[in-house]
Length: 484
Image (cartoon, rainbow, N blue to C red):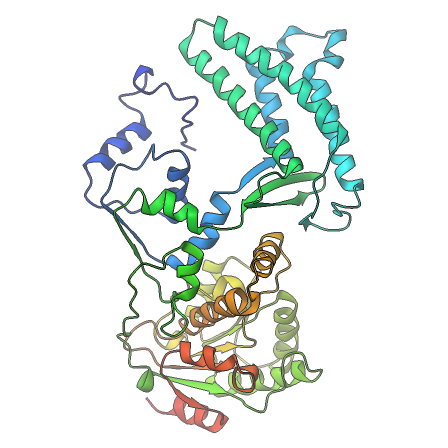
């Protein structure tokens, strides 16, 4: 595990500076003409005032449809209960508190008090009816909260900060001074984040909390809007910014991404695909399917899946929008093919890479959810059919999604047209894109959600998909598989 913390690093003053992996890499970066990093590293560097990546003329974002999610995550501030406990232990170890032996005063030390007050604070959070965490994993509370245990904890944190500042001033070793300063800054920042979470004075952000494990809470402050952040952090620092992705537009409409990232003055173009979808693919939509909310949808969907599996004889990936539906379909369909030689695979039975390896080894039927909608590259006859069981509208249950949708409504917008529909279109395009990965690929995409033809918004989905031949007749699917 190789890592470097800017608050602890002695830089040129460090004895190991010349052989340090981190600084050798920095020197290589300065000499490079092209630097390839992932989105998380790029934005984390912007957060710490560009301390890693050198000055560049421009930046090209591939898979740019993921920027919104990454930015919202990277620009969130988090107070973690478990992380705070680890920080207290680290401070105690550094100051030698535990090495001083048993001391009756230890029980009332600032560390013991802060731990007790943090426990009391957590109990108050669970009991608070407005926060409403009881029985839930994550919530988006509406109101400012005042929890007395936090004020007590804050005063004792000040005592620990004083001890660290004293150590920083009195210690003659430069590295220890730096380390004391680092611990002090992290402690102050942690207390500040929790205080801001309770005060909620910043109206440009929303406040939510999540239970990762029993009584291990994380408190988050997340920005509503990303357009100003993107302008300040990216466009201000890079004269040229290019965004590329197969799913940045709804048809030839770039409104969603330009609105989210504040790119209304940017030039945009939708380039033609190098693939001949008319020859290489067939889009099967059964107009007679019940809508997903109708009671007989599930059984009808099972029947269509059974028929498609028999027709393709494996090499079929079935994409679901919920784990429960995926598991129900897997159990039912696998039972109907008992005794047949077609392998059945389901997401969760092993890791994604292992499942793909098994899928490629022998014509199989793979039941999958979110992970397999995008980023999967299976070429040739190994993948002949992609089935999309339901239009991928997200259910805004997570606090981040709830807050984003609510903010659009509060500003007088239409959350369905501005958020839900574009995101579903992008995901459908990603799902369709699993099929044709080269000019030699051929296959069928089947959509088992009749809303794509029965609802007014269905036209927007269809306009966004590649120009494949379209049919509602299963016999056309059978003929397609028989021809080469």
